[in-house]
Image (tube, rainbow, N blue to C red):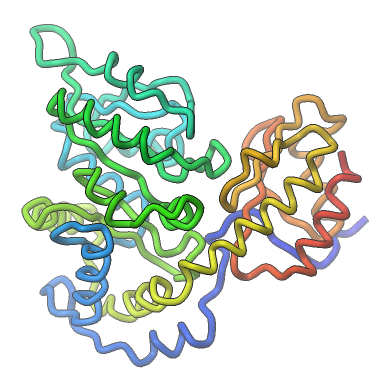
Length: 344
């Protein structure tokens, strides 16, 4: 049977297209050459994001991977150590960049998502010594992609901040979807921001912008980040066109993430009777399906869904991911909620 026309695409929230209003903002953007630090719209975006998170400065980059790796290279000298979750994006989805580009040694705690125990992390920290590789930074992911968009509680993050301060190590947040945590828990963005020495935040995951992430931190750190961005090939020219999309996204598309969360919960409730997901754990826009007890594996499920006009991501033989976003409709969600349980 030939594939049906695509009715709803759950592969990622990066698949969104700029809206007509966002395109108008991009077309009207005042621009300059950012390698010369002369793009006024980019200046506006960077200042806006820094203020949102209560930091001194921010730097626009083409991707979340570049933003993360710049922050980590500034925090961890070559041959020294980063601690993070075993399924963290910085070690699972950035093609080994920390090691290949930054010479960073990584050590991980067992994947915990929202159930992170700061005491476990504190016990892993290695001080300077004759033999041991010293720990220089800790990275957490908010929300946690491979743990179903899990939101780390504020109390946990505060305890982790205390542990990092006590040990004298840098605390970084991969905040690609920190907007979703903000909407889900109501924690102000500057409350999150002030807990971390650096953050990366993404404009193209859920917010609808076509390109861009930012590194957030102190003015001194961001000045160093600008040089590192150039070394990594991230210096751009009239980037204000992209910055205008980011400004539009931040001013118009954060609060509406609650709609994506509600749609994700509807999908989880529809699929719960099949025993593949617990709706109580779906708090943002990512729905992971554990097919360990199902009659089909991930590739077979994805192929069957495609025949019904539904696209999903296969993350493992028995793991499938659905992500809701602003380009979907209630009709598409209803179709998926009706069809997907029958494929299990």
